[in-house]
Length: 229
Image 1 (cartoon, helix red, strand yellow):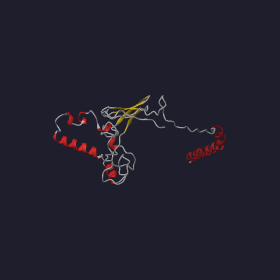
Image 2 (cartoon, rainbow, N blue to C red):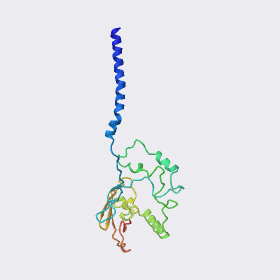
Image 3 (cartoon, one colour):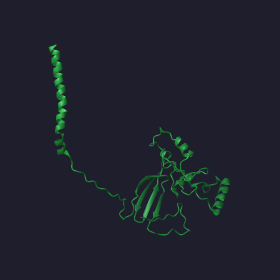
Image 4 (tube, one colour):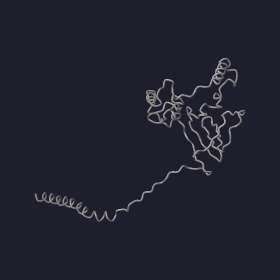
């Protein structure tokens, strides 16, 4: 009994000491806190500034992606500019187990927002304006000729068939089925945009020069530009 009592007595003493130690620490806390309280921090607000090239123009250089699952124009049956059953249906087709790092899957998984647009065209109906009558006539004649002479020679075959030109090269520049990447390079008086698909370069003068004469026609058109802001 004496041994058992001693064990209990010693345990009680240890427990009492354990309770007193926090109290001692608490009593000394104000002095400790007073010694370690840091001085008030001074916060400064940094103003963001856009990067500039050596000649003072906005620096847009780099490799960019224009991957998007938003169509260029709205389907004929589409009535609203945003959302709707078609968007929900398209979202349901995305396989969640797909890895975006897999080849060719980036475009189909890219979303503008939860409330996805139905077209990139911002007109009220979301559609590309129809061709003027003269252009419609030329298109009809070309289609009629191709139906009868589709395989006569390269003149009747599309340039994309031989990877000479691709529909995404524009204008407007649109995301292709894969390789939706562009590289922008700037120099004094010029901006160059290279697209990974077909690797064509659109060279855009920004020095205020006019367009080429109307009798000079280039495969990718005649681009000129200017800086604003």
